[in-house]
Image 1 (cartoon, rainbow, N blue to C red):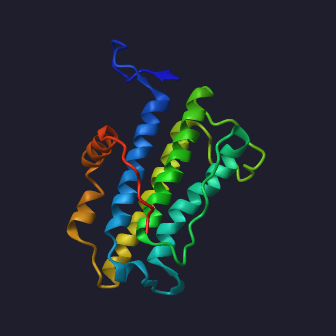
Image 2 (image 1 turned 180 degrees about the vertical axis):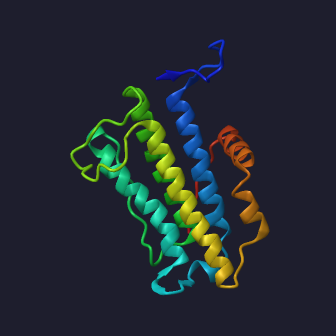
Length: 197
């Protein structure tokens, strides 16, 4: 679906699916950027007042929430959900890889919506019905969800007197840097990938 940029002369058209997918990829890049920079002692730290929750489980929830939505909205349309992450044992490196896998599923959902006139088609599994399924609302919902939990992690780090490195906090707002990094990585020749520890 093509939409105009809002310019009075009608120039500057953008393609909805591509724009939404690129925005989502940047949101994922910011989340992965943070996860990779959480210090090990903070990763396993319990959440005050919720001792069964840890910073690790909050981070894993981001991937697992995506998996649930991909399964709910996408499975009937041929979009396979990746496996869930174990919120008790997942490492930062494994979660970063899992987030990149679930991000690809999220991109496919957004592209499905764009190809379907701007809305993800209904599915039998979607019974909550509290989220409008147009691409704009879906992208806004997931951006808010990711930002909420990234903010939780930053706040917990401060509360637990284990502040995140300054570059981690500032880097979450450097969207242009995350985009440049992703584009540079895409231009590199593909090499055999080693398994994630």
